[in-house]
Image 1 (cartoon, rainbow, N blue to C red):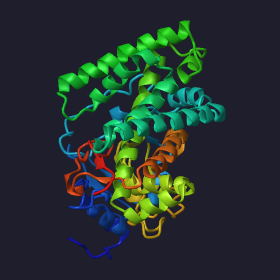
Image 2: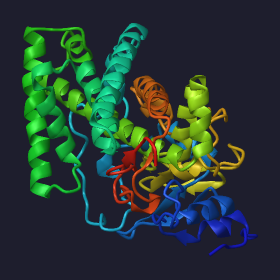
Image 3: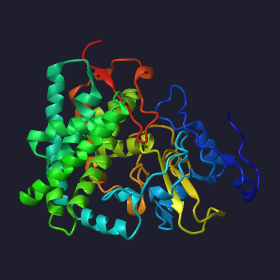
Image 4: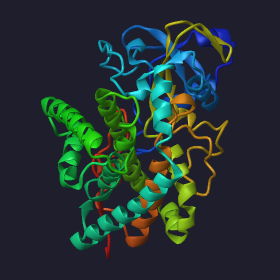
Length: 410
């Protein structure tokens, strides 16, 4: 239901309470919940009632979300947060695990960030780009040999970034297949909770053994480089787990959901196929339009005045990146997918001290993978009706569980 914009004074409007909208519009798998746009139009920072009863805030405007994630007066420590999602009202998370940068504040965050930032060098990104191209070509060759139809997630969208994480961490080729299976099992929707927990603990042990191996036999990879720092084995294993979590599920779902979006916007797919030079713009626009890491949380470490409102010490602020990236005050016709758009300034990779460390690698993977896929298979299309594509509607990272595709003559 549409509402008229509020004519109340900001002070009164600020006391109105919302609950976090989570249901996407029927038949619009790429659009955020419609209520977010209504809230953003009325006020980009509004009161939010959390399932545990906490009265905090919801930020939906681009400028507002950007300001909060750039402000170190807001904490990203999980033990301070209230969670806006139903069913999580009794959840009390412990402090971030060792090496988990996204759940740390300064100065702990600064120490890890400085060590890692220097490892994503231009030389290493150039070398990894060559490997992305090789791995992409190998998997497209395998798809062609297999013939239609395939699940694009299993055949292409997942293995490309998974193998690039292996390259980044220096996972030996002999154990890459088992490593990738364990990583996939953690988020497998068909797996039991016990199986997911077992896979998580198994990966922890794998990383501890990998760190020992890198100390004894270093190779040209980020993990080997970090063994020369003052980081402990526990910290190195934690950082390896963090890089896996940050770089695999996100990029895999961007490739999968991005392909789904292009297939349902054939004019956009045709434009990319006709001009692969549009790849850079296409990737930035897909990042903005899809915003798969859609919701974040910060907690005020002191009283903060923002947008004429007072956010008090201890209050949690839910950050709707998907609403911010569809803000018409920042992007013209924001609900339209347009790969000719210069979508600079989107918040898909965050902003401030927690901006994604591996964003350049993620961009490289998408810039290579998507044009190559649509060029190799010019008749690529969905093998099922769009409404039958299973979506990750209940997960922190949005995307597709599977994407059945086919090609050739109809």
